[in-house]
Amino acid sequence: MPDAKQNTTAEKTFTFTNDQTGEKWTFPVVEGTLGPDTVDIRTFYEDTNMFTLDPSFTSTASCKSRITFIDGDKGILLHRGYNIKELAEKSNFMEVAYLLLYGDLPNREQYEDFRKNITYHTMVHEQLQFFFRGFRRDAHPMAIMCGVVGALASFYHDSLDISDPRQREISAHRLIAKLPTLAAMAYKYSVGQPFVYPRNDLTFAENFLHMCFAVPAEPYKVSPILADAMDKILILHADHEQNASTSTVRLAGSSQANPFACIAAGIASLWGPAHGGANQAVLEMLEEIGSKDRVPEFIQGVKDKKYRLMGFGHRVYKNFDPRATVMKESCDKVLAELGVADPLLEIAMELEKIALSDPYFVERKLYPNVDFYSGIILKAMGFPVSMFTVLFAVSRTVGWVSQWKEMMEEPSNRIGRPRQLYCGAKDRDYTPVEKR
Image (cartoon, rainbow, N blue to C red; front, side):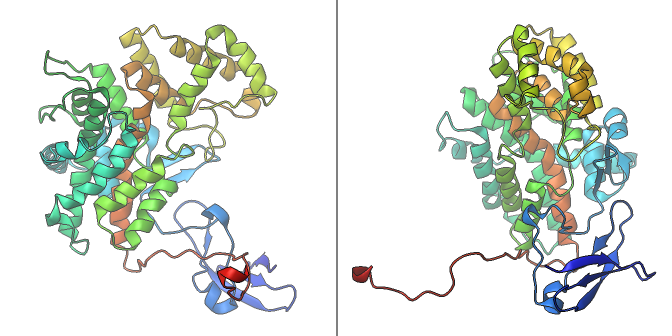
């Protein structure tokens, strides 16, 4: 194996040395505004006749991006340079969506124009309701979302030319606006209730809650506290750099697939329990614990490696999840507002109290993360566990379309084509079936 050695000259290069042959290859080092420098190995195969091996791409930068920056060791999450905590506390989802999509916070006129564009795109084509009827009543809402979002391309032919910046923008607006409508329809379909149309007089978060929980038989008033909590959930999950689903959207988009297909691909990736199912796993863990009295036994089981603690710690954030503080405040407000008497919520609060004070968890930085609190909030609001990942998709859509739009505007964009280390059989002669 070649041995990589840092070149410390002023040119910022990185030299690879083959210990067997003594050959050396030098590659430029590219500096970002924040985070680690990056060795540009685009010509590595051409120069060395070798590939690099990086399973899961955990050490490979797949793109240049100006959208989101994460420093997991320091617990930092920035959108276009703005701290996520400040955005969640002072802004709203429409502002953050504009920021991700266009690069700057909007002025008053830009904000009102953008809000109006999104609001008046929330309706979906009436024929889409017949599309829903093709699914079984017990179909998982994420399975429905994969189908109906991809199907949007068959309804909106006027915004499929990805080479046209204006059509890309219209598609982006449509996706951000229509995902909540489709998600609410998936929920209503799963519980056998009639679809509720969007309302233009409500905010983005209020409208989503109204479409999910209103019924024709009586008026539904959206609680300001629940709407604020939903708005924060949307902000805190809006984008998270080059995760699995975002990378899926970019890879699909690199083939010049239409944006609706790309977002459907992202939804399919998000559906995986290792990615979008974290808050669902929290509720399943609470159900497994069963009662508040069993929490100490469960904690001991975690220490003994008998049980897995879900919703604590984070793969990226090694110090603390910067989103969790905001989510905890919302969680406390929602539970106080609803006064929900739910055994699972009691278990969650007891688990949080012990884990935050127990030296075992404190020393290992197993703090409650955003998924722990968002799962509790969604459960308290009345969403079934099957809808948790759908809500994640509603929020993440703005990040996906922003990343897709950025990629499409990159002049050097080419179709993605990862390499492999082949470990299979070498050339073999074919043997007719009667001689095998």
